[in-house]
Length: 308
Image (cartoon, rainbow, N blue to C red):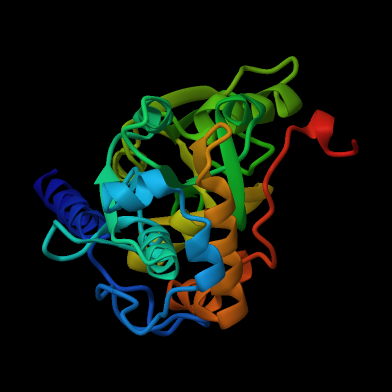
């Protein structure tokens, strides 16, 4: 079957090329609410906000920089530009804008997702902007300030040959990113809710979303479960390879700081200033994520405390 093998190889090479530039390609210029280009936005025209800047702890000011950690793995929220060095996307844009408002330089750090909270607890970093949902376990360790809202979606092969759906994944191999909320909470919840008396969902834990999508293309997994904006964006880059079905568990997305951090009030004030001045809305528009913006930087609390 030489012709079939050659055709298959071409498809795989094409998908590899697409995935290799998911971290250095532009948002879809034809998509509503999307601006052109993943060029570095430095926010040089953004003036410091005196109220927010006054809340910056002296220890951070004296250190000379705000150290922000994230897992740089997936467009459009956090990925590498074409130089494979510059970090761009929604999350780094917010980090740099917060730095401008607080009148302090920002240094970005890229670490694996499951290393972020330990790094914050060890005080190696000041905060994280890495698309984290406020789970009960995370709220035990972190202050979490809301900056967006989105959920999880399922990606399947193009034309969905297995007829899968978010509530029809029992017995299927489903890829999730290591350290993600899909691994720790969302997929186990989905399995418990939909697979009683049936074969359970088989999670396949992988280092990145690119790895997950490559395994989907090769048939080693049946589906990928990941953040909705990430899968929606990836599909614009490889529309013939897979499709996205459904959105589940829409929830707040937060900035994380060590529990009880003296920096938390300054971060909240900086977000409020960005929202009031329109820069926050511009950042979400720039990355085609206007529908994922929120009106207020709420400090999240455990569910047991919400009505106290």
